[in-house]
Amino acid sequence: MSNIRGMRGFLASSIGVTCAAVLTLPLIPPAVATTARPALGAEVATSGRAVAGPAVRQEGAEPSVPGSTQSLPLVSSARDRDAGDPAEQGLSPGDVRHFSLVGVTWDTPDNELHGRVQVRTRSVGTGKWSGWQDLDTHNSAHAADPGTDEPASGRVRGSTAPLWVGESDGVEVRVTAEPAGPRPTDGPEDEVRGGGDDSTAHPEGAATLPAGLRLELVDPGEPAPEKVDPAGAPRPGSLNPETVETAEVLAASGANAELAPVGAAEIPALGRAATERELLALRGNELTEAQRAKPYIGPRPRIVTRRGWGANEGWRERQFSYTKKVKAAFVHHTATGSKYSCSQAPSLIRGIYRYHVKSMGWRDVGYNFLVDKCGNIYEGRAGGVAKPVLGAHTLGFNSNSMGIAVLGSYGTTKPTNASVKAVARLTAWKLGLYGANPRGKTYLTSGGGNLYRKGKNVRLNVISGHRDGYSTECPGRQLYRKLGSARASAARYQGR
Image (tube, rainbow, N blue to C red):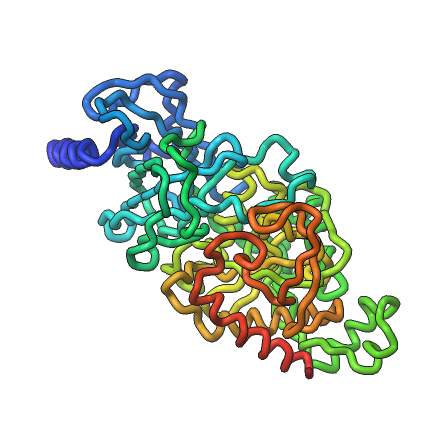
């Protein structure tokens, strides 16, 4: 116990040097932390003094829902600072329930966080603390278009991008407002990850932080084991027995019924001839004679369904939302860091899904598809992979487009060949369903953003990077540099 107190004192003193305001989370054993709920107004020690703060809300795992979210308020303490010093909030080292994904949210999505958010975490496996890692604070570029029902729900919050840290049981965070000037971009990948337009200076005199800052610690959980019948044989596709028979589960799976059996964990790959026959079955009434004679479409790739990666369909909005067609694809990176294994990709996606819905207040995960570093393709927002599902991925250009997010951060890290090939195969098929040429140009009408005013007709590449529609560094310069190769490969897959 004396060693714990000594370590706590050392860490608290080191934070006092760099942080203008911090919140200390009491050090409690992990077994107790799973159920501990400090009362409203509970005093929490911070840099040697007590500060009354709001309750620590820990959204526990419901009996039938794997995973959880711990939502911890960031509270400033009183400390003498020079006039003009940036505002700062934080959370000092403390034990928490296990989590693998971390992000920061605030009350109002229209308020941007002009500053720096850094976290360090303690690994369950090694017991060691990581170095400080930056969270992407320019996440507002990934959002639903203004005027749609998603941002009007009243539940949407501002947020950083989430960061995948692996299974952890300790966390420390510091949030610092930045004065006017460009955001720093130096530093190694996964230490400083750009997500916004670093060439854009912050508003003059911006030295405050948005209200309602909270640290979100996400445990993605594990899908429940397959349901078995009385004879002990597994029931195919029933990965989540507690919800397998709900209307939401059946609807999400049924949206792909033309491509795979209801309850399937994946949509299998098809050869070219079978894909062309499928195109005629899906959209034959809408095809021109030329398209019927020469349907430029790539072979359908294998796609892991929402059932396959363990989505809990009870979280999302029940109704699916569609646009008219798919004229373009926007490629993103998730800015979650690239330190994940491909076997962890389903957990990472479940974490992103929980963060988008539970922490940020979106109707569903924002991306239409996700791709991991091994080239596996995953269904994103529910509604059917062959249908024009309206996403929340590129603010201003979600209509008549789809969003593909490559899991990882690609500012300085190069994407794998497998992930770029997967983007090409996916776009060759999905764009081919709607007659779009991957090497071509198209026009989309802006719904409003920081590059194009609402209503402007904008000429874009059919396969574009996120930064082409919104001033942001996404999908990272290394992935953005590969889009030309993806366009050429996708066109080849289509037979062009």
